[in-house]
Length: 245
Ligand SMILES: NC(=O)c1ccc[n+]([C@@H]2O[C@H](COP(=O)([O-])OP(=O)(O)OC[C@H]3O[C@@H](n4cnc5c(N)ncnc54)[C@H](OP(=O)(O)O)[C@@H]3O)[C@@H](O)[C@H]2O)c1
Image (cartoon, rainbow, N blue to C red; front, side, top):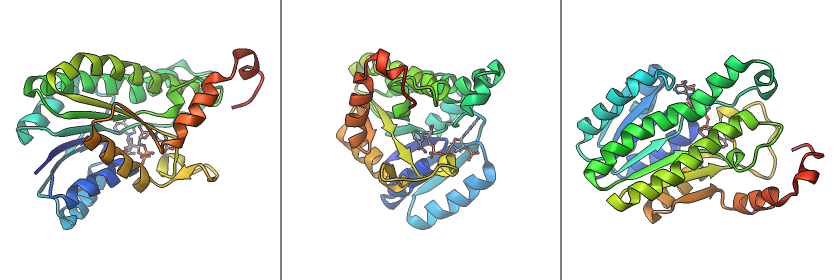
């Protein structure tokens, strides 16, 4: 029976991941901002077969709560097989261009808070000498683009952190996985017109669970985004700076 912590558990992608583990009768420890949403999710996961579902309310930007939050989660579960970090927000890029406080808030939500939580989680995982740490970042972190470079900067920061963490912590038997989704149809992207590149959160959840089991280190979700980002990264700067992307 697996013991799983999910931070940002009310996210559409995280909810689908939790359902996959509930079917396998996992013990789920869910951490998220909205306690009424958490109550609903808990009921659903219990019906789906979860062995236990524990819920905790938090705000990602209350950094001084992070250590206790993580320690209590590990203490409650005893051994943690996997920890998923899923919370995030999609900034208004135009607003960020003139409001530095908004930039800081978005970098905190999407970058600094994730790194803070991972710092505490990595210590606990290292002590137990096993487990998996998975974070949902984004293809946006691969190359800064005018349409979303504040969000991209935060996600890129986390991806770089994960590379270094993986190198350090893999020696203790802990695996680190960076999930980079492309366009996913969730509340975060409700306002966007959807096209052929879009997928449902269920699809990304399947990829996440599969890659955790395969002990992958980085996974684009779906995989075709690795090709798209490969091409985008190859565009010479002189061309890149003249196009809208
Ligand atoms: N959707 C996409 O196309 C896409 C693409 C690439 C990467 N991603 C990333 O995938 C992850 C999951 O997003 P999603 O698409 O599933 O969107 P979502 O359903 O809107 O989920 C976003 C989650 O972040 C939580 N959150 C936001 N600010 C928070 C804060 N200050 N403290 C605590 N929780 C906070 C939200 O909590 P509430 O429920 O309380 O609002 C919600 O659970 C995010 O990291 C996102 O950046 C999404």
